[in-house]
Image (tube, rainbow, N blue to C red):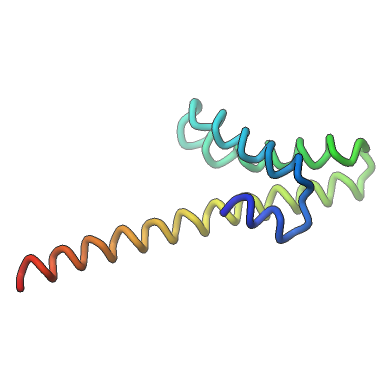
Length: 96
């Protein structure tokens, strides 16, 4: 979902790969790393792909980073909803 969120906002291919790399590296830093890793990776990847540090490029890279982070949050919400649905089905079928 992180990659989908980044792609929806026009991220480069490098930004999506760096977001994935940021996610993997962020796993070693606990919850703050998991939350910040994809954002930092996507922003860094987008800035590297644009090869520029102009204000408009930094703004666009930040937009891609936020899209990546929102994709991560949406994926997490969907996983939790699926987990609760499975628990509910298990309890329902156990009582029947």
